Amino acid sequence: MSLEAINNGVAANIFVKDVNFWGTVYPTYFAIPHLKKTKGKIFVNSSSCAFLQPPRLSFYSASKAALIGFFEALRIELAPSVTITIATLGIIDSEMSRGKNLIQGWRTHTIPRKQQRCF
View (tube, rainbow, N blue to C red):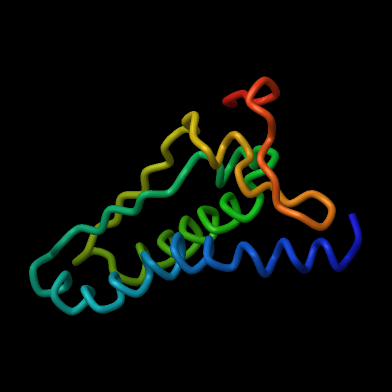
């Protein structure tokens, strides 16, 4: 794959990081003062992809791994007043796990149904 194709893939997948990482970090940041006062709990929805790194899910896996790293560090910073639980749920059969929006060469395409499988 050419460098330009890789750059197109990165640009097309920035939203994955924005949703999965920043979409969890920003609300947590604003909730921390209340959570400290009430000895609250934070629940983080990560994924087993953070550890397994299946093909076709590299950007998703990286965003979920970033969540784990961030919240493991935050767990130490906020202890003992706030506790954090990180769930690493398994892979399910979905458009994403079947390769919708798979970048190959210059264009985005979906893997034909007969080649699809869930991990």
